[in-house]
Image (cartoon, rainbow, N blue to C red; front, side, top):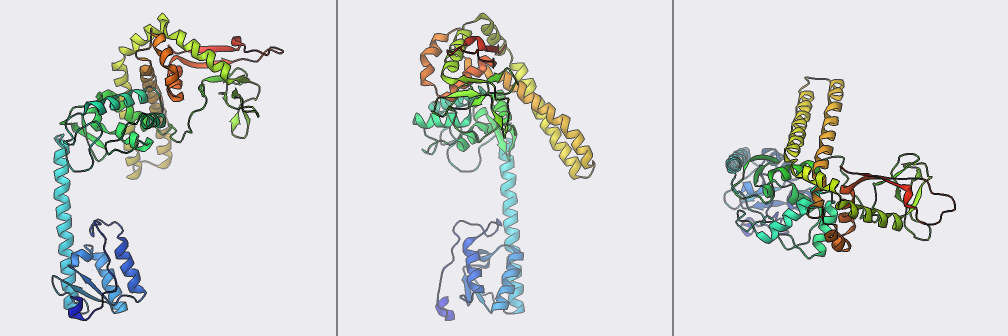
Length: 433
């Protein structure tokens, strides 16, 4: 066609696999327009007008550009001379028809996906979901065991980052053969698929045609945990076992990591910018960690903790109760936002109503966390020797999750003057019930 029109082909602009209808930026199309504005393009050849654009607004802008710069347009499948009124009418009719065809096709696809979702069936392509075979229906046992393990560890309080790092260290690949990241692990654990539920556009719409790997209750608890805005996701790797557990007896603030100038690890009640502590309490990290670990292991064999564990195992209805409370409260937040958006309530009314709703949501999340926390102790309560044998093979985040499942806080008292050895009498633990 270029030869027939006497054109010299200066460049080719190919946006491979980028839809002219989707509205997404097409880099090569934009480059072509820039070249035309720079005077480097005198004519544009396309296979068909709908390959150039499927948006009437975009077509009008292109026609204006051609008028201004005297750029010609030719299509292989039919002549479209936009320099004439009839040619422009033809172009606009073809553009409108292409837009209608795209919209109609999109609507059919959307309805089909909604139909498949409502019936719990698989739809679409994409990579194989972790834990399932290529058919996306059959459970792959080896990966299912990893899914169940990760879910249990997360509910027990272990950070996603720590779990992902452990999977990498063990050489456990993703479904595509790559390495796990906190982001990819979060996506997998948040997915309703692993609890045997069908999700569509972020909402659970049906029971899935495939079996779940974890329970529906655990899946809901994981999503509630990961959706908590108070949950920090940018934590650095843990280096101190008892972070957030030790409390100053003078001011009640949490002790933080404060190594000595020589590098010796220690905990301190920090004062200064960003800290509210009194600066009066310090304790050597090695000594206090060794003592607390031994005390926690001893606690595992106590009859009191065994009774607590037995109560937890009977607490499934309580977990369900807090999950339902979280879902109901989140739905109320959406209703409140809609009422404000529709101008049914004022900003003052929105703020007044939002505070108690957020307080209920925070409380429900904490209660759910308390119910789920002691999952990490399964198999260890009444069997501290097993944990003692495995302790050194656990990473610091796993060890912290276990200790925090046993002890709530440990109040650190003032040091005795002239007493240069570790003094366990300074420590007053508050055990979890």
